[in-house]
Amino acid sequence: MARGAGCGESDSLVALLREVAPLVTKYLEQRLRVMKEYEYPRFSLSVKVFGLLLGVVVAASFMLTLVGKMSGESFSFLMGVVIGYVMSHLKSLVLVERGEK
Image (tube, rainbow, N blue to C red; front, side, top):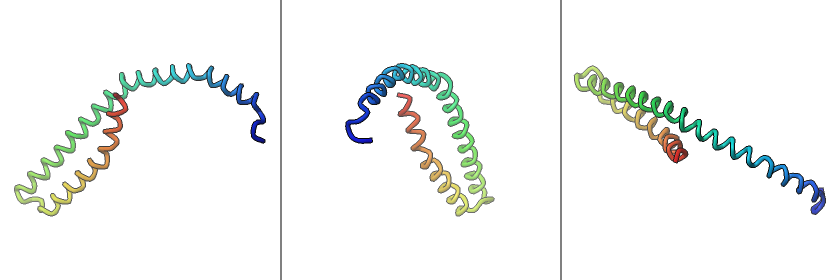
């Protein structure tokens, strides 16, 4: 299409966008309300349960290392894996927290 042609099409597009904009705004406001009421508490609970489970695994492996049933190298490897996992998912946790504000 040549430049400058179709001016009527751009006017109709602008009119359509003006009609759709309030609907999009309403949808986004409703979606944000749903996220605050339902999704964030569920996410928060799952993070707490995961943290508890991770703490139990670390504590158990620490105790096994302490009594000599698990080697120090294995414990170091496990701690490296846990720290790497937490660091890789820390970004997504920070983004979720930032999105809620």
